[in-house]
Image 1 (cartoon, rainbow, N blue to C red):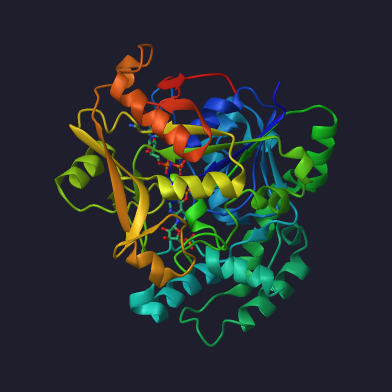
Image 2: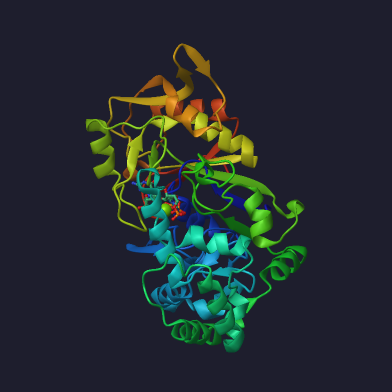
Amino acid sequence: MLKTLAVVGLQFGDEGKGKIIDYLASRFDIVARYQGGANAGHTVVVSGKTYKFHLIPSGILNKKICVLGNGMVIDPVELLKEMEMVEEYSPLKRILISERAHVVLPLHKEMDKIEEEIKSNSRVGTTGKGIGPAYQDKYARIGIRFGDLLDKNLLEKKIAINSKFKEMYLKENYDLKKIAEEYWRIGKKLKKNVVDTSAFLRKSIENGKSVLFEGAQGTHLDVDFGMYPYVTSSNTTIGGVITGLGIPPKYVGKVIGVMKAYTTKVGEGPFPTEIKDSTAKYILEKGNEYGTTTGRPRRIGWLDLNLVKYSVSLSGVNYIAISKIDILSGLEKVRVAYAYKIGNKIIRNLPSNIDDIYRLEPVYKEFDGWEFTELDVRKEIPKNMMNYIKFIEKFTGAKVRILSLGPARENTKILATI
Ligand code: GDP
Ligand code: IMO
Ligand code: MG
């Protein structure tokens, strides 16, 4: 029996990780999130009700222990709101927050906006949740950690020092003592939940407990391996599990990558297979491709297997879950990029330089379409759809084990057990 499984996004985020994690969580004792913050939006649909998680791991509805790891940047006000949303699942009993996780301050959110304004035409298109500035402070060693919320005097001091570094930028006037008071109150409320989650996880795994590691964002938003600078500020790939939770590599068992049957992206930056035609409009509306966190329409493109293959290789992905394959149902032809071209030259490896990435032209293979929706979940997969899946497996070298045919937990088809 599999003891640990790491979930990573294989594209630009929003691959359907929340849904897959909720589906898988029933088999695990603990679900632990390793990076990111409220920039994430993980949708879970259970018994006709839709939940959007930004901070709480998507295993909460399965009544599992949910860990918010040290690699996260957490907005305590948002966390409290989210805990209220799932009050019936006793979040106070089930949520453990790393004392080492960093805290997002209102100042970080304003800095996020200011940085985007300064960048002007080169803006990243962030979610505005203060993620970049909170991670900047972490690495500048001026960040506030969740454990600091338990000591009011210390918290006041740290917030005062932190704000000094931003004085020349900030336009709003902050009552720093008031922020410290509000955050301290939240700390007091969550005192029992704030622990050494790294020690907890290591001990739990040693004692035979099973853990599902929840990733946010996707490989091509990774601060090192994504399309820099159009990335988020954390490691969304496999290394993030180890540093973001404080566990040794030997405790990371298998890895499952989640991908959409096509590609979407929110925010700026290169997107080699982007399309803006009537098919894009069709997918946007049918797939309800609007950001879970910001409501922005997502950019749409054909499946880019070059990106997926890179992600599989980088994180050592064993299994793949494909979501939203129902959205492609009904299209006459479906395209997949399996190489790139710059001029007449075929490019098989993704360049690291952003200008080179902008120059990539996808090389496509075309597949005949299929009809298969959530109503067909128990039926045999049609031949054309199987060809698509087999091509993904062959090209990436990972096994497709889960197909998602709709947002709800039950609209899930297992091809083989993991
Ligand atoms: P995440 O950030 O990776 O968890 O993905 P999001 O929740 O941001 O975006 C995925 C969206 O697609 C959500 O609205 C889900 O409810 C929805 N979704 C997930 N899987 C499927 C699927 O297989 N079919 C359809 N039609 N919708 C899905
Ligand atoms: P989930 O976990 C999709 C994108 C933003 C922007 C860039 C940097 O739901 O898959 P940030 O606010 O992190 O500084 O923004 O990253 N982005 C996401 N796109 N899904 C996400 O999370 C994202 N989190 C950040 O749109 O382009
Ligand atoms: Mg999302």
